[in-house]
Length: 409
Length: 192
Image (cartoon, rainbow over all chains, first blue to last red; front, side, top):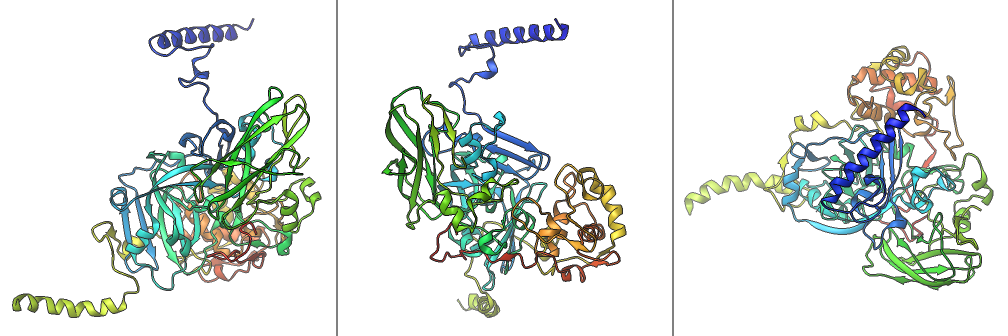
């Protein structure tokens, strides 16, 4: 036997023994490794991907109940390889440009102003991208997690941006604003002034605690219902201007050329359409046997509240209304459930939702047609880029109870 | 009374032009926040718009850019912007810019973005990641010249400065349409 290996085993045994001793004083530790356990049971695991210029966390949608994503499980797209270390005592939010009174706000200033706490989802513009269907690296998590888990929902606390803009006195000719983060990548995004005045939050709290560093500590923008790149983290400078600035990330990475636009791309994509997904049972999980199965999932829309969720268990031939659970809030995840009895036969389950604007979540075929594309485009290599992808997600249940993703099958 | 009027009147008269000129309503929370001076703003405001109005004076050539790139950028982006740790900075070749299609991942900044100022703004504020904002304006003009030349956008002897840079016509200048739905939204599907 390799002596190093032997030593390593010995070390592991000792560590486990020590952990057992430590645990004996308090919590019982089952199994061999203290690290694999959690005082409340097995914790949900975020999926993750790290690249030299990019870090991603995927929310384990399959593993939690209700609509609030625990802060450490909130999805993340960080456009750098490390998190900024910002001293909240030193951090200032400046508002300048086309304003009558350029102002700087400290954290104490922001907390002194009237506060709001509102529950909203955030979603990456690239969530559910066709390119990630079929990935099989276990570090990403389960399919519903890495395909759709770049959306999360939190209670955000802070001050409305409109309050700060009123203090600064926005000039009549202003129409846009550009927000810059205090991270190394100087993440920057442009926002129409009308949206900024409507419901955007300068948030310092998430689910009752200060923002986590990966969520923009000490402050971030939360732009309800719109693609999350607008919700600039570590927000530091807001410049009020009279035209869209088309900065690097938004022009380079957050736009997509489409056949229906003659190969051109929109400058910006703002609000999300209606979207839902069944989170359990979903691909990678198993149904143990025939009989009662609770189907559950999340539905949301950038337009406001979700007014209806329907579930099909026969591949989309027929639809029945699912139960929406309170609270049903605008621009927030809505939890739905559907009671089902599985007969042990092959089945395809999927959900679709309708929002308060009366819009219905499209099927893949409808979305493909709408974008001027052809079904064959989704077989190409490399795949076409697609953002704001809100097609209905079908999961196929085999006779042995195993489940797979059949959107592009 | 007369005493206070004597003091108040000049102040009231002085305030009239300001009140007439002001576009915006008065502050609701005047005790919160700190006013910024023009000098304060100049010390941090580096955002450059599409027309390049905020560009600082400076200039750089393709040759100077090759030198700056080798010293500051090559470690991540690779020799001449190719085969580095992230996607290539070069698509197309001198005299032959890449003109799409852009349906997949075949794109880079110079080939894709609509305005030449975007390259300057991003490199100036965010590069290199280990010390963002540390490039001098001349270095940024030079690196932009270098990248634009190898992507077929400018000629080898073109000089980039605060006047010439905003005039460069990017190959994908007409590749964008305004955001729809416009905001506030039109009566169209939001996933349009």
